[in-house]
Image (tube, rainbow, N blue to C red; front, side, top):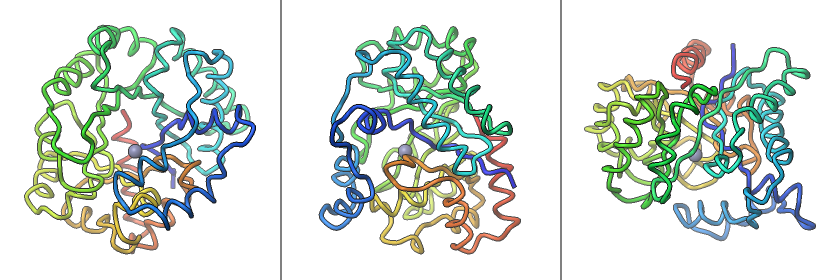
Length: 299
Ligand SMILES: [Zn+2]
């Protein structure tokens, strides 16, 4: 069965730290200490994201391409035949960022000929340049960008989706798909997002399980949920793997795909995510359905 990862961050600050820092973060150690010392939820997410920031706009384009290649190589090595890599919004400082992505992808296929990858751009809704970025969607799509991910604040409380709707419509008009991470720690934002036509996928959505109305809404609209099992446990979206609502999503008729989220920081790969899904009781046929869904749901 083809293992497809539809939720993978580039993790550029963490990967830059590994390359450029004299004392890079030891992620196995960091995971263990954060899980024991920081309560689950947003605080833990922030602690896991706290790495020395190296400015991407000060980074040589060759280093930028090297980081994309490392992320894609790790995906291929971890068993993925396809990954959809989330490029940091800061990528736009490199006007040729899609050419860099394409070069990184091509070089990975020299080692892994069956591997393929798509790129989506993370967009920060608070960015003052948002309007200009939306105006560039047509060119970006023509250069091969498949879609966008919308990042917003507050992440764990109801956000204002007026700007988000405009961005989603602009992406849709350029022929690109839209995904949004939401509902990691509670049910906030899920109902609002399900109402925006261009949003075909939601990342995490663990909080939906506490609200039968939202479960129904996601199923009726056919919104695909990107489940990241290791990340959900490390960040404390669920108290344990066994408590993850993945089997309930499937029972409710919600389309599900799998993802690694931040594989380097979480210490996982897509083969590990499929194995964890199997340990939750998904049959071979269930996993094949997840894989085919991922083929259809790739942006
Ligand atoms: Zn994520």
